[in-house]
Length: 132
Image (cartoon, rainbow, N blue to C red; front, side):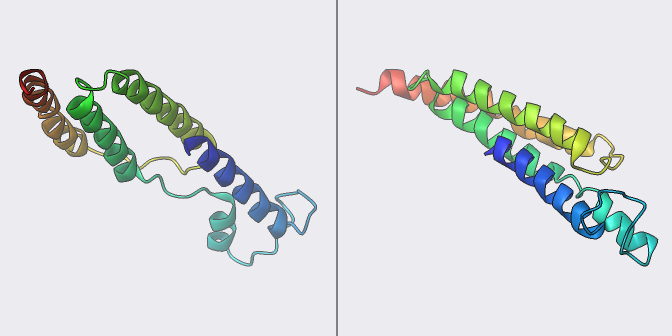
């Protein structure tokens, strides 16, 4: 799904710009009357950083919770997070606006939550190995 979102956002942005120029492709020929309307067409969407963090947390916790019983979860989680990271970098470079300046409170809260993943791995792994 991340690759589909990259293509979808790119195509939608180009179609909006093409519709604004009435097919000419020249960004100086625009149908917009104000700067705000022009910027709304040619700037990208805001970056939804909270969705990105929640997806990474979800994948990590699922891999840690069930990975001991199904070891294929670890390489799958690595592949999924790598694909998402690649697609995010592409979208930040080409489709999204510049991300807002953030402090480290969001990263610290994610790291605080993330420290419970290995504990879940230990408890669930112990239960899986001990349970007949």
